[in-house]
Image (cartoon, rainbow, N blue to C red):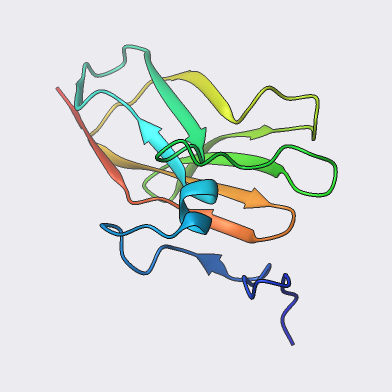
Length: 129
């Protein structure tokens, strides 16, 4: 038996939009987005922005009863970092982190909503020169 919210989004499975070209309101609130340069230099730090929700100005709530717990960044299958958010206290779900890569990879993010579970975005390729 799966834990689930009243809207039918399972807390124990990965949620992804059914159609990336036609996002539902729930997708626009929950999908984490990665913004990174297309090309970086090997061994040199660069900034990566992670933002959860806010697609087409549809924001994720940030109240005690409904909020984003955390967002994680991966390079391929390797975890890079995890940022935890406190309900009410955090000012949105938008962070920048500095990372260094030695080889080309795909960055991806996952976010967890306390009511609607785990969400993932499409991958973003970064080429290392």
